[in-house]
Length: 392
Image 1 (spheres, rainbow, N blue to C red):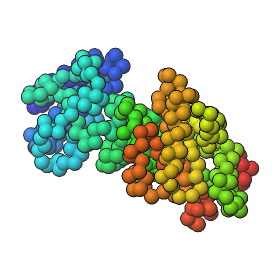
Image 2: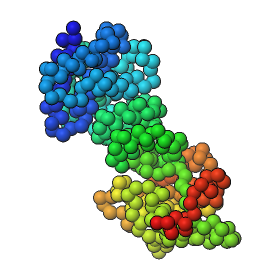
Image 3: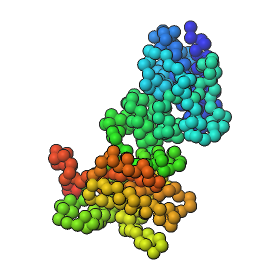
Image 4: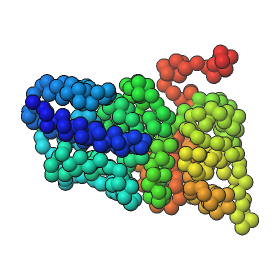
């Protein structure tokens, strides 16, 4: 009854296995996406009956002995994979004009797509009018933010977990990147999503997309920094005793330096501490940025300027000076442009985003809290840092 369907899917599988044997994960995703589209079109329109996928799966097992990954459940997952992206903002009962919203791999990466065309699976039988090509049919509303490299690195099982776990586009981008970056196992990824690890509005106010010409680098920078950090190792009582803001900032700096491992674990991955009050000099004028790091993932110097009060626009001018000197005097030829972060007690997000947009060096403004500033219930739920040290 489903002879044509079995032959069509079998052809796609065999073509895909040949290409995937070269170790290209995107080929497998392309095949699954194409099969998912084929199944979606025939099942959603009532052309096939309810037992179609079981029958097709059983016949595939007979014709391709030892075939794995094509059970009825897996075929449904392929349909889910296709519908999870192509119909993200559409009602499944409605037909969609994919040609009007289609994007190509060249648009996603803004690079020559010859390599992709050479290895992409063109399964014309799945769609008589057009070959099925995942690159040409994904409906992505925010192309510039789409984590294209991570998308094609992520195994199919992870994709299904993400599609099942969230319909929010930004959350999907976040989980795709985190899963690839941290090599999160599939089962752990489900827990990660279930615990709502995607923080709403967690991205630091920044100008990265305007100042970093490499779009991949800009996306990594956006994902690297949060808009708020909990520095629960800072002695707030000691800071409160000081009157001068400059002294306060030095106290914060010293406590971060003394707890640099804790700070790096809070700040993010792949940071290496270079030093504090790092000496910079140009034309006889000296500058001393508070904290200087190198980030291996970004391949860039990261300078952090600490402020204990509210955000002021003058802080960005100060940061600009540091970044200009770092890029001219310290940055190695193979490194990316240096990045600056103002870390202050409070900031008006809308004001920061308005002011920062006209600066031509990559910068962001984040805030920090200490344990005593957390809600009382949550604060007392956390162990005392000294007790925790004794316990360890």
